[in-house]
Image (cartoon, rainbow, N blue to C red; front, side, top):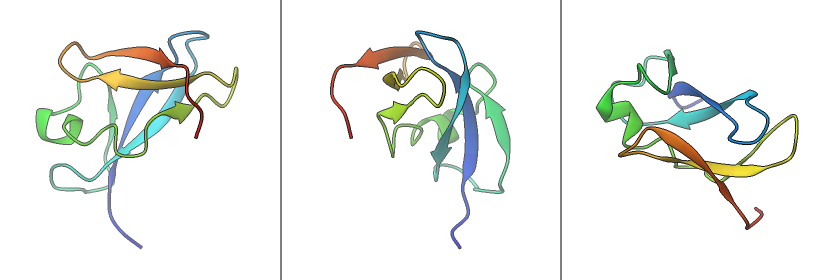
Length: 76
């Protein structure tokens, strides 16, 4: 199994936190909030994006430079 870090990101629609996995940085199975995530981890946060919210079904990803989420109209 590969190592990664988790970044917990709120859905822009319903605000539920969903997991975004990143292989940026040291990959020590750490958990981060979007605001406190190290830059190297954040650099790979959209590797599986867009993510589908587990609660409302909204697809979204992270605007890395602003550390904010935005809705995507495409589906996986």
